[in-house]
Every structure is written in C-alpha cells, then in structure tokens.
Amino acid sequence: MPFVPHTEADVKAMLAAIGVKSIDQLFEEIPAALRAGKLTQVPEGLSEMEVARLMSTRAQQDGTYINFLGAGAYEHHIPAAVWEIVTRGEFYTAYTPYQAEASQGTLQLLYEYQTMMASLTGMDVSNASLYDGASGLAEAVLMAVRAHKKSRRVLMPKTVHPIYRKVVHAIVKNQAIELIEVAYDARGGHTSLDALKSHAGGDYAALVIPQPNFFGVLEDADELTDWAHANHMLAVALVNPTSLALLKAPGEWGAKGADIAVGEGQPLGVPLSSGGPYFGFMSCKEALVRQMPGRIIGATVDKDGKRGYTLTLQAREQHIRRSKATSNICTNQGLMVTAATIYMALVGPEGLERAAAASHANTNALVEKLTAIKGVARIFDRPVFHEAVLRFDAPAADTLRALEAQGILGGYDLADHYPELGQAVLVCATETRTAEDIQQYAFHLERVVSKRRLDPPCAVKVT
Image (cartoon, rainbow, N blue to C red; front, side, top):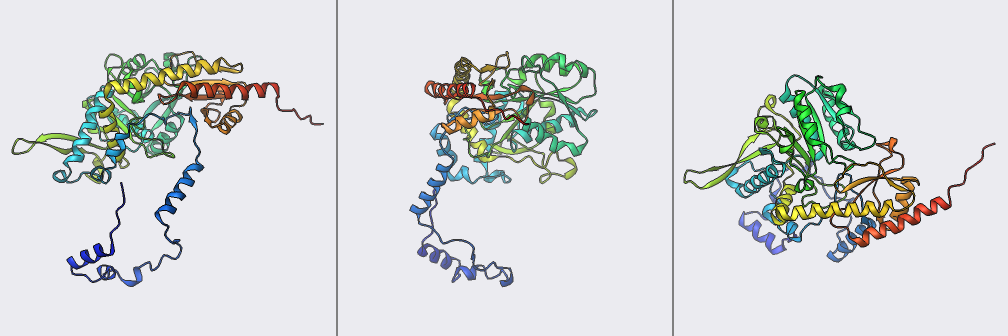
C-alpha cells in the first residue's frame, strides 16, 4: 500500500480543526517522565532514492535461484491481480471483525473462504484459518482428543513433515497427550497397514494421515481411514491444498471420510518470503464443529430480509469463558486468507487443476532426467505428487552446495531427519519450472556427481 505523508499544511489544518496548537500539546497529558525523548540511536532519514537503493542491494544479497526446493513451502505462480487486490486499504488493514455491522466486507470474504475450503476438502464446515499448517495439525490433535474423550494418545506416522511433528509435540506434550510414532515402509515410503497391526484395538484417539506425505508419496488414504474408524479412532487428514485439485478430497476417503482435514495454505496465493507468514486451514464434519478452534463466519438475513454476515462461533478464550475455550493460539491469518480467497476465485477449479497437473508432470520429468545420471537413483517405488526422494552417490550436503553455487536450489537434504535413507534429497518441481530449468539442473548435477566419482576425496592414512 503506498505511503502518503501529511504535509505541514495538512498537519496545521488538522490541529486547527481540533483546537490544538501543536503536536506536543496534543500529547501533553503523557507525563514528561514517561516520554522517551529524542531517539539518539536512530540514524538520519534517507531520501526515497536512497531507501530504494538500500532495499534493492539487500534483496540482491538473497540471490536469484532456480528453485527445486519444496518440503512444505512451494513456489507457485500467483496472478498479479491477487496482491493488487489484497493490498487495497480495506483488505490490507482489516483484522478480527468484532463489530459485524462495520465489518461486512471482511466477514463476506471469510465466509467465501470457508465455503471454498469446505468444498476443496469435501468436509461440512471450515473455520476462518489458523496460524500455520504445523500449529494447525497440533490443533487437530487437541480437537481429536477432546472429541474422542477416552484416549490421549495419537498415532503419528513418520511420513508426516518432521517439523510439523516437532511443533505438535511442543504444543501437546504438557497436556498429557502422547504421540506414538508409526514407521514407514522402506520400499514404498508410505504407512502400511502392516505397520499399524500392533496398534489395532489399542487405546488411541486418532490416526494422522498425510496426503501426499512428506516424501511426496501418496498414502493409501482410503485404507488408512477405514482402519482408523474400525479401531474407534478419528481420521485426521493432513493435506496439500493444491493436490486436492487432482486427488480425492479427505471428506471422501474410505467409507465415511476423514473426520478432520488440516494443512498449510501457503500454496494458495501466498509467495515464498523468507519463511512466512503462512496460514493453516482446518475443516471437519459437522458433528465436530463445536470442538473446532478459531472462528466460523455465518450468513443470515437482517430485519429487512437482506443478507448479512456474522461471527457465528468463536472458540477462543478472549471471546468466551476460559474454561470453554478450545484454543488460545488460533490466530486468524486474515491477510493470507484474503490472498488465498482471491487466488482461488481467480484461478477457479480448472486453473487449480492445471497448476497441480503441471507441477506433477514437471516433477516426473525432473526425476526422469536426474535418475538417468549415473550415481542418482529414486528411493521409493510408489506414486508421488510434485515431490520425490532421490539418493546420490556423492554426499548430499556437498552436492547441494555445489548446485547452489551454480544458481540452483537442488532440494532438501533429508540427512538430519531421515539418516537411514543415506545421501537422500527431496526434490520438487511446480508449474513454475520450465524444461530449460530441468535441463540446467540435470546438466550441473551430472558435472558435480561425475567429478566426485572421478576425483574422490583423498583418504588420510593415520599411523
């Protein structure tokens, strides 16, 4: 949003209108002892030209790379109109719509967002967003435990994003909720029913089902959902919203559908921006709506029969009695949700499907190109969605650094989280990658790997 400073004449006119001689007089009720005085550590102001040059220089320090890095944050095309609309004053400065009569525009947008997300996930109801995908999953775990009432244990597959697992643990560990890790199939990279056999008939509130999972691998969502329900658990779907343009919605999984669906909304019109901000989405079956954190916007009619919008359910302790609150961290990421709503409205179901299909096709092309290189192999043998895990003969960290020197972000090193996979890298290609980008990656990777093969590090003999 452009900044328009007030001129001296503007300031004088405003002060005259309220009968005050100066800015200092306007704030004279503040005791002198509480005033900060001059800000001696703040540098002198810069001109517009100097500020623009400084910001340009700092932006260039980040560099410009061809991006094949995903792992929960994805570079998708965002139509220019999205953020032109989002940064209009009426959207840009809007926050929680406490006064419905003064917030009809914000409430209508959130209502439309909820409608879109409920449709995309195939669920009955959606809330008006959460802080991010990781804390959203934590909220889903808390919600499942409240709804189940009998168990405080949740099955958490190792195929769930490792950072999400850490966030969930940090949030629920002091609430006597236990996360039970479920191993993945070494060949397929998925959670098999065999891995769940030992938990059958156990005391669990829910099973988390990522689709696609962190490896990009597609899980057997129908089987896992039915297994959870057969064992008296809730099924919590952790999904990529872009993938839902091609894959079955969580509300349609198995015989009854998942009970709760959550995920990260960043792929829906939110640019990559040094780590955030993002937003989490959550939807669920109607039977669980009063356990849902956050807020829900509803539509009604006024005394004249005209449509209006209101905050129908508010589950946060600042709105209701603390004992009845479901969460105190369920921040509505209003600006990001606005971007997502406008993005989905602009691209529509067909545009979202095209983006998903192009991303999937580009990843397949990338994997085919890279695995043709000697010393590069695909690890898992199951279908994937726009991400895949590759193993290098060369050290993954060194290889990725060499690629970065060539202007390529080659993927996510899995060594810290999945050391059992060896020199494994998670690669991703969205619709923004071109055939030339993929060829560039393959060209430089082959040079790096072959150089490593022909010129291995010298062994040091210790006597």
